[in-house]
Image (cartoon, rainbow, N blue to C red):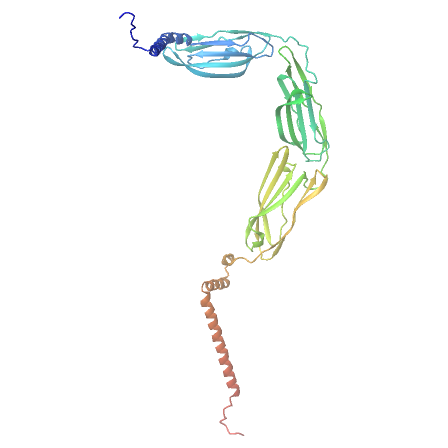
Length: 470
């Protein structure tokens, strides 16, 4: 029929979807045809090097990136160190395909510092692959001298300070020594010679602690040391000065060498003011502990007594040995001692524990004498003393079992027999009580019978004599 339209059997939405699918399939097919040739071109075995800058100033480092594909052995980096020193080395690996074979792709990022001004050459590198030996490209870097060689660090760029908490300590008394170095800019080729502490026992508290501080609205990098010093002899002790040198880098074109020195310090150490063991401390405590309650000690018991001495501001080797005085009925033998020290927030605390084995000999009252430790109070600058007060111990009689053991060792037969009978009596108390009562009754009957016989004999008349009287 003229003017009539043929009905559309495929809606427009369906036709669009089919067209899109056909386009996607065509793109995938094209990628499959192109990808093998592209991969094979990108992943040819070899070594490639690149540098971040071809011109640097003296003291600046050079970053070199290396990509190695399909190597059999590890890459030799020796040719890169002919004109420069290696500072840092980072790298990684990934997997690739070369000629339908899985290979390892090695990447390296190296930082080198050229040794001299002028031209610095890097490479070439050589290695072996499955397709034969390969060779990398070479790199050339020009090292320029600093533009301003007359610049030198000033007092605002460098600061150094060494302090002592006391210049006239007593022997063994703690001194706090601090060394602080501050610099405004980075330093290359830095060398620090620390002071030596001859004549002191040294306990390091901080060692080369690096922080950033602000002084007069200027940010400075700080290196700090802190030591606890304990003089071991009296007299004048000399602490040599510190030496600090290096090259300060203000900018890429301004750098200058410096040398910073501090003068020596003399510490005058006074001798101990008292004879005997010398303990200069800020606080001293004495404590004791027992393995058995002293109030329940009996003759023959063996127990331990531990005395702990704790002092602040001294080292563990400065603590004296604490020995309690002997008592007439208790023996005491030192069997163990432990020394330790702790450093917390710049404060050293030392302790020593002494363990004594003690044995009660006789069941008598015993007086344990006062334990005394004399020390010098560095805060009040006066002599002091810490004590454990005297104690009375009433040593009781030994237990029956202990006495049996002792008697068996001494072979006292009669006493052993008596104790054996006593032990039997403890098992059958009722029967033994009846036996005692029966024995008393028999004894009473015997006494009554003897009394009656004695009375009868007293009142009995004498028998008549058989002879006539004269």
